[in-house]
Image 1 (cartoon, rainbow, N blue to C red):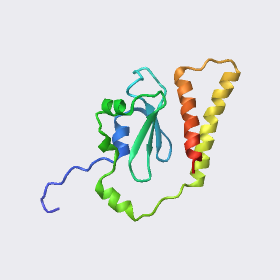
Image 2 (cartoon, rainbow, N blue to C red):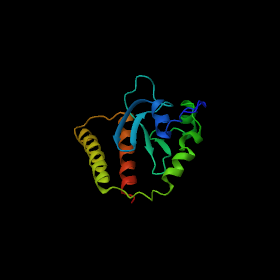
Image 3 (tube, one colour):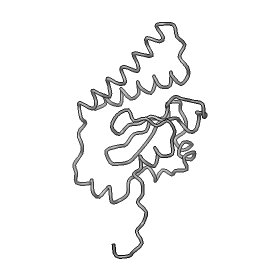
Image 4 (tube, rainbow, N blue to C red):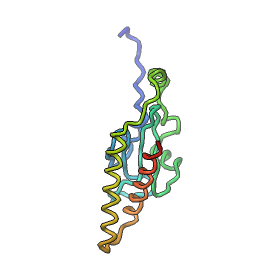
Length: 151
């Protein structure tokens, strides 16, 4: 190094989101679930916030309980601009070509989602009462399935 002060490396957008969340669990490549910082309290164990990384390197999220996007960002002390990659990343990937969906990944993610739906259905058939968080999770999984199949 030539002695010049090096600027701190900006975290990748999805990493910035994940480091500020609780109960983060990756459930497929580029997709995570976590506890929503807006509506869930410290005792909550469910993961209603879905975080995903797009092909362009940007990050986004959706709360299946309906929390406002900007409210979640504000709670995490982030701005919308933090969800987009640096110019360097964009330049490096500009000519990489559009990535095609990996059919194996879609099948694996669909299998995982179908298992969650099956568990919820069996619980209902057995007369169990599902919690509000369980219902949000089922709604989220259904949304995920629709998104995966939208090729």
